[in-house]
Length: 404
Ligand SMILES: Cc1cc2nc3c(=O)[nH]c(=O)nc-3n(C[C@H](O)[C@H](O)[C@H](O)COP(=O)(O)OP(=O)(O)OC[C@H]3O[C@@H](n4cnc5c(N)ncnc54)[C@H](O)[C@@H]3O)c2cc1C
Image 1 (cartoon, rainbow, N blue to C red):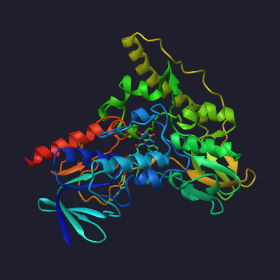
Image 2: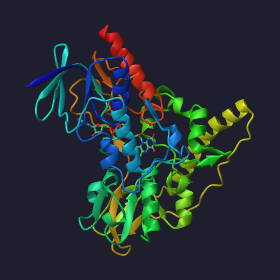
Image 3: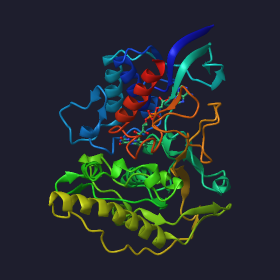
Image 4: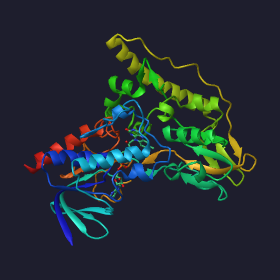
């Protein structure tokens, strides 16, 4: 059996639902094919205590703007999922849950989307399957001895999902830092293998960090403004929404007793090895913070505000280039070294050598094939709850124009 629709959207996360919202407003017939349930990624790939790092007022989904009693708070996972469910219901989003798409192919002017039960033919397709698809494992990851339990950050649920003993977390973006803090607070010995990540204070001059990010134009940066295409892999600044939102970065973790080590480079039966690069990594983080600081300073100059922050003195921590697995009682490794795109099931020649869709404002070179939620799709806010709505409106408008 084959069903035919004008537009098929793949994915009912924020990118797919925001596109659905705008297509609904424009009266365009469409369906949203979702492999799991609405907001599946937030449900099944986030840990139990997860809460947003961005404040609630910055949840600016179209027709699903946060309007609760705690705009300066940070929604916990389950409340965010409920917010998504209410939002999808509010505009009667035509979501087909439990509909994983295993392939998208061309058939003349149609796209054919393969699902387990049947195919769907669509004139237009919007791929909104998420920007964080495949967990990245650095070279040497397969050398960790089998006696050490390994899990991905997306499989971590809570302290009890980690065997007794010390934990080595490999990857130090927002997720790595938050899991490190949770495990350390629960009394575990935690080693954090640090990569190139930057940080900024949670609050500056009486405003939240995200206010400064938005007002300074930091999230308006485009891919062309980055030093290289690879620079889009650099994460958002280290910070947390826990405890009402506060600083969480290399300095706070070090002060609390989390042991910072350099970049993971491999392992043998007895030891895990790290590059002697911790000083360089910490300096690179501070340098990146200084780049952001320039944007903050420019905003302050424009609005005649006092500059609210100075990057502190460099941190000095001696390098640890190896950890003895048994002597340190390391029982678990948690991988949180970032993600890479995986669109292998989209059969069209529209991907760059890093696997990202080649697109302009969401449109690929294949007429009718669109993407949503891509990192730096239009700019740095394309893949966050604050900015995705603008991109969705642009994509929906283009689909409307194409039909006429
Ligand atoms: C750990 C983490 C924390 C984050 N915290 C914040 C934050 O605090 N604030 C913020 O603004 N942003 C945050 N983000 C960034 C961003 O908001 C999320 O990644 C968000 O989930 C992206 O939305 P999306 O709709 O593009 O993708 P997703 O939410 O991943 O949605 C994609 C949907 O597509 C479905 N799907 C995938 N493949 C298929 C297929 N082949 N067939 C059918 N369905 C499919 C999935 O099941 C999923 O429901 C965070 C990201 C991560 C990884």
